[in-house]
Length: 124
Ligand SMILES: [Zn+2]
Image (cartoon, protein in one colour):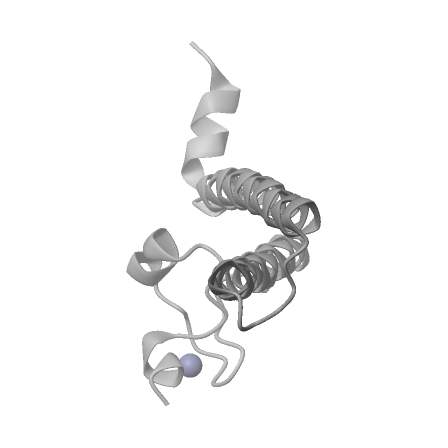
């Protein structure tokens, strides 16, 4: 029989932290994989020497770059949100809406552990 197990199950803070850490790991993996894609595209354009937009291949590479860049910036923003959520978890303000100060809601936190605002505020 373990008393520490009963203690960790008493509060939901631990599972929120676990979710955030798992989400953080997944996002870092995504960033690493996107960075790998990015290097591949840069290599491809270096090898073929196409930076001319009139060249169809150059346009494809430019499109690929833009797509990867957009995904990377989304993933980095998400990582920043997760880090912020972990900081708030440490401060004891996790799960509090940044705009209205009300609860973000367990369902929303389960779906989006790094959510900064409640559903009502997110919709405005
Ligand atoms: Zn709110």
